[in-house]
Image (cartoon, rainbow, N blue to C red; front, side):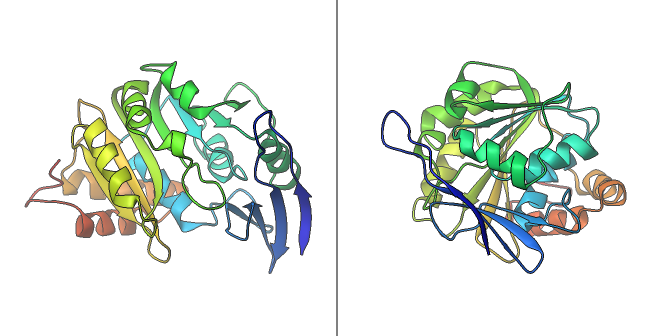
Length: 261
């Protein structure tokens, strides 16, 4: 069932149409096609319905108490809502280019209004990151149109700006599609921008691959400490952090003690 469909023109060209549909008790956001950009279970609207959004929260394994975070690409606001509700000591700025996405997130996905811990900006995410060096402890990038990653948010210059945007010891999480033909190129660019200090976390059921980039000084990467933190976070937040850690061990370079970056 389609609930909402709207297009807003830009000075140059136009945004993809924003559509909202609902099926089986789950509400979906689409941008210019049938691909799901965001999902919200109506009976549990502040949970992270899509696994890749839960996987992006695995940044907490490496930085469990961020003070300032930024999210590039809002979608239906699932991650923004979750951080706002479950991480009360973290202030989040979410940046979304298309103002109709923000309107739909607030009208149909219960994104709360701005307050002391949440700011939502209708702005260019690449410019936001570039213009605020050492501005955040955590940076989350999840920016796709109907077909592929937004090109301005996947360039060498953008990934270098992401590294510069983080404070020392910061972590970035990038949502990539492993099925995209340029996945290898994007992964290479992230690796170069972060000096090879990257880990990957593939989603279990779909082609999303979360790439974590770390700015020195690097976090503790030994398995014993990370496993203890994963269990603690699972108890606090109800997310499958031990499973995420096991999957990361299977897809990254390790030695007897921990991850090798």
